[in-house]
Image (cartoon, helix red, strand yellow):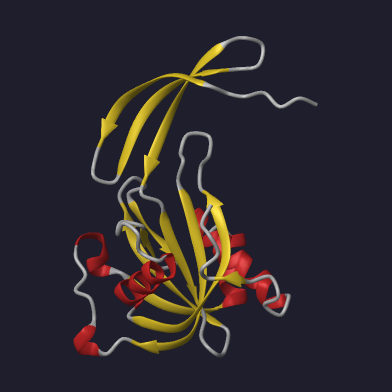
Amino acid sequence: MTSFAHEVVSRTERYSGPIFTVHTDEVTMPGGRVAKRDVVVNKNAVVVVAMDDVGRVVLIRQYRHPLGTKLWELPAGLRDVAGEDLALTAARELAEEADLNAARFDLLIDLHTSPGFSAETVRVFLARELSPVPQEERHERYDEEADIEIAWYDLDEAVAMVLRGEITNAAAAGGLLAAARARDDGWATLRPAGTPPI
């Protein structure tokens, strides 16, 4: 079967902001039509499944305005420092959101969060060999982060929370399910933290 090349024949920018841009592409389709597709491009993100030596993972609960509610999630953040190593970005976000340092990072999975309209990619790391950030070095949280709740759950209970619909953040669900599978496989499926990003 021959592969069809979808070509962009025009692009119109609709919005440009500090976190994401939106543009409309006119794209050639099989059969000769040209279709319009809106595309969101953002800074991409990292997510961290931080696991302690007894198999617990740290979850955070924070307010998400588009949904008007708080969600249980994994520590995460935008890839907003140009050229920064992604494991270093993950380490910074883990320290800022969960007051944790990790001596070891491995790559769990890469995700396209909503490829029907977004080019966003998320890299999910497994962080282990954890230690607390010293009190005097902790990040001052503000805005949505100011009232973050931090809690520890056994990984199997966190997976059960996903399956019961209590964790609905897509990257958190994917990360927790991947961590459980990787653990059950004896960590054989982990990739090096420095694996080139998608």
